[in-house]
Image (cartoon, rainbow, N blue to C red):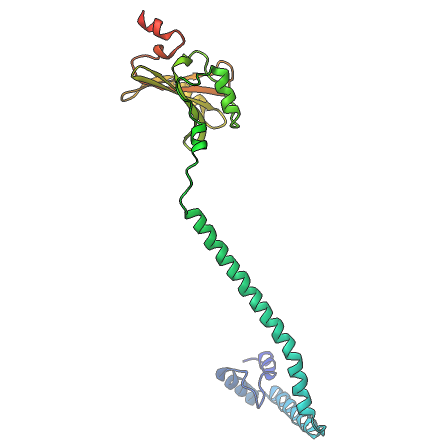
Length: 247
């Protein structure tokens, strides 16, 4: 142990205190025994502490001072204790409100959802009741906050349903056309949501039991039509397509 450390630890080495660990206290005593300067300094501090203690104990204590001090401390402690308990109670109340709020939120999220028939029915077009033209379809989607341009070369007499559906997490307008046993689904895609250049590069192809075509919108360069259909040709779904298919 060096002198600097020893003199620092002297402040914590008092006869009536045990602030130092046993190993530190032994190392300090060994240093004081070997170092005359630090030993003399320690002896001087202990002598000063002894005389100061005697002087303090020699001061006469007024009668009743001890009891008055205890009463004063008790009077000051009561408001602090009340404030401390109030703070604790406020903290407990806040914690209880938080627990109740979380419990209520979890219960609300886990409760069975109410079937909103009006919302479901608002996306349905009943066959024979409403058979709009392209501009009517566009107004329908616009009323739901979605701008789009409906294809004009399809036979809207065959339109059976139109509404918003989820495609890869995006809300997309869908038009469903029916011709006898075949159907054509038209997804109106936007370049803000999908890579139309990649989709248009595929143009058309066939899968298992279906065919598809990707067409650019002639009215808006930012839109394209993905048409997935059954049957041998898309001709029956086009305007005048039945007569064209018959020929």
